[in-house]
Length: 181
Image (cartoon, rainbow, N blue to C red):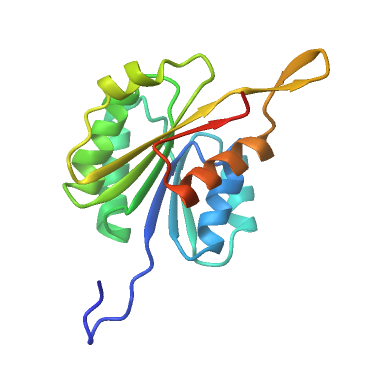
């Protein structure tokens, strides 16, 4: 909360994997007033995302989250330049426990925040929840990506459907959101 002598500071969101299927999530956050930091690996998609976002609302950092040293350096730098994160949206394919622990240790550092954890269709939500060590200051939510049934076949979700489902989860704050089936 701002004091009388301190203007309201925009909330800070960290999006891990926010230039591909979750690009619209990153842009939506920027358009709704968040300062958005995106951790990504693809320079071309990062550049496109920055050009599309409202001015001075979004920054990208090219780093593979599996590179522990570079991720630590990046998160520490982000904390120093942008402050701690109020919201973390994470689509992490491998080793989410270690990556999310780094986010906690080097970016959030015990401050209250919300984690929206995006997982794949075959994921066991209870098993994932049991392995993610979130502190009491973290409000944990899961978004499970499913599939769409059309007539006699199924198909994967589109990027627009994925982003829409993640945005819905951010808005509703439900513990679990399933996108598709």
